[in-house]
Image (cartoon, rainbow over all chains, first blue to last red; front, side):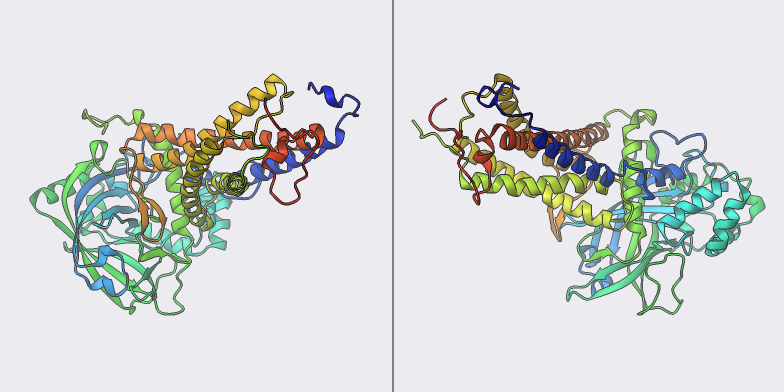
Length: 352
Length: 191
């Protein structure tokens, strides 16, 4: 450095040491915060990778619940939910919905008859500009009590070591109940006959500021018709999508939004634990599905059904999953959106 | 002719140090939140959005003050490369302070994600929903954040260097009011 006025000064070792120490410390702290240093921290990317099949993900598609169909419709609120939450979505009125029916799994071409879990994503907009997103499945309880346990389960289930799963199920016996449900629950003919559950608990905040811990379900108005396993195997690979398109084509399909309110002491943090059946419920309104649209050009395609997108009046509870799902869904969204060209639209004019 | 400043004005210095804390926190929050799946993820991302908009507002105020009050002249004997680095880094800092929040806001808009600041306060989208735009902005936000962080480290190193080695008064132009010593090399007059 040109420094003519100070040429008598010795080498500024102290200054350089100070700079090196300070910059080094801050850089290491940053790397630690970023998760770049070895640690036991579970990251969203690791979570998403655990869901990927051995051959790698289907580019451009959701990393889980990859197969699905978009729908549009309305949420017809009856006003009864307003006693629990001040969110506008519970004031009497009709609010537009963009949703997605799906099946669990990373393969967007998975045959519907082998689907083990069915899902529903919804986004409801209200005139005040707030929105509510939710993603639910048809299981009565979830597979694992915490995101870390779910990650361990995914790794154990995909491990070539047969002991891995036994070790997991010994530590987490609730997984056996979940697998029993997956294998043996009756399959209905349609998403329109499927009950979807939030599994995770949320907190509803009413206009006086009181908090109510709730879980949510969409209960179908169509009566359930079970398909026997032998007949299920013969169904078309896309029978669920064909069915919903046909039903919606002949008339709107409906589900009631049932809010279940926890009693004090009910397990709100653990979605593997059901609440007793006698808990108070409130029917907050009706989801009316009016149009089904293939995902490739559909309005749900680029929506991330992030369960942490909540309007004022709904917030997360001590259940750790909505945060973990929000983080993992974002990682999945970032990947698939960047891969859009691998899942090309069929219609022109997609660029808005 | 406007009298030459020997230091930045008090509001400029206050904003500089307050924003330094905000931006430093912001970079750690940002890089930390995207590696977390724990409930603090939601808290951090909420702070990140609100603080980002706060930084945008403060940066615009600061830019206005910078244009109105200008800056103290650099020491006349500052080598030309150092002078170039000082001038260009200031432009880059202002571009990042204003650009990063806008990119963040824009990428949420392009992914049709709501920009909720706190409670019922939310901002309108500033860009159309577009997956290509989202990907571009998402990557830019990440890369520019790393660049921002690196630039802050260089800025910090230069500050210590000017204070401890050259003692040329450059640190004093932005030093907090308390305990400032006007060195014999402090810059006065013309350049």
